[in-house]
Length: 25
Image (cartoon, rainbow, N blue to C red; front, side):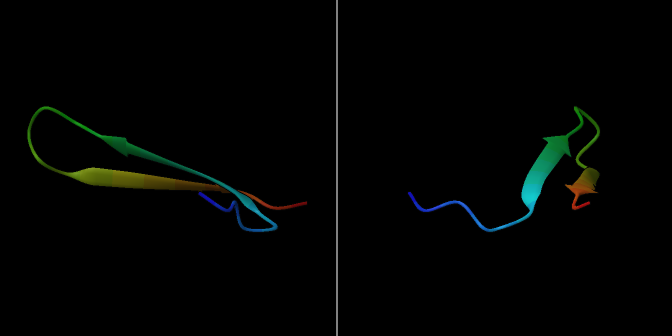
């Protein structure tokens, strides 16, 4: 799996909502 230039962290909560964190400098 290739990673994008920006490090993307996707957190899926138990309630079904998804939160995306983009750690691009």
